[in-house]
Image 1: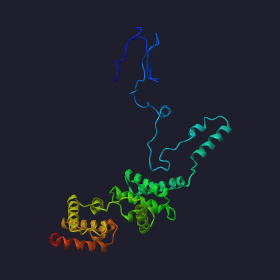
Image 2 (image 1 turned 90 degrees about the horizontal axis):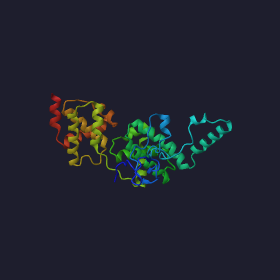
Image 3 (image 1 turned 180 degrees about the vertical axis):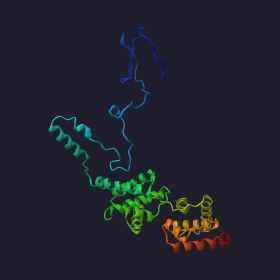
Image 4 (image 1 turned 45 degrees about the horizontal axis):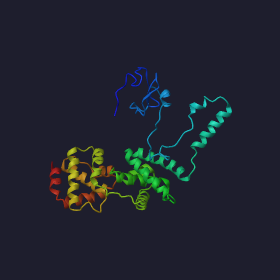
Length: 307
């Protein structure tokens, strides 16, 4: 319970009361009675009005992050500005020697993580992935390194495989073609590494939902919201009759969007849709024929073409 602030000493009646914030005590200056101890400081963690004055008062640092090789818990011996405060040349040499040994990485795993996580951040930035996906990928890569799964494989392919697995886990639609373009690794190699690390680390990954790709493809093709909703409706109908199983999610999503664009009169060529989805025109054509035949959409498509 919080006590009311005392105006006088209960022992001698003196009003010369001193609050020692550092020790958490309230003391009477006249008789020395400790009126209150173990007080809780409810003020803010630190006061900071400028960079130079506030830095010395900080008692906390940045939160731990799996995207850094030391998880953000590493230490630093001084700063460059401290160098100019040293008087003799001997002290300056000692300062730089201590600083160099402090930042030197000792183990092979740490050296690998420092390079790999920098590459992971670069690819993640290129693909504009959210922070949660980047952190998940860093955790997967760290587990792969600790288990020795990187040996015999290029670091870049394992990074790309971890990022692809993280995208699948967080339901952020990114294709293998996009991952290949960002990392510079062949699509087949990324897929092979992705399957290997998910199997060895027992990472559970949900099957790709074709509907997740619709907003990105529709935005790139500048299609209306009604067309986008129609494409999702077509995909739901296709899923109900198990037409989506065993087919690539990007191909079936692009074909559904192509059909929806024809139905709503926003005609886009198969070439345009294929370029956005990263698939071939043959794939679009085959999935298109399957959709309009199995879902009986031929009349709707023909009717829109006549308008």
